[in-house]
Length: 77
Image (cartoon, rainbow, N blue to C red; front, side, top):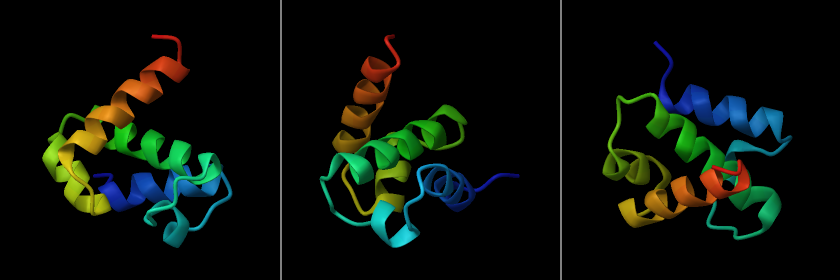
């Protein structure tokens, strides 16, 4: 089974950023967008709530809800 950490590692590698960067509080687009993508990918598995995803990143569930909306916007949904 794929874990939250596995998904984060995959997204970080694809965007050529470190795990420290993706888990940081940086708001730089090169960091924030992949972090939002990772949050959305984890939530899309259907195994975790927004609260659980937020906790994994040290964020509030509303941050995850925002990330889901932003990722959907960028995908044109």
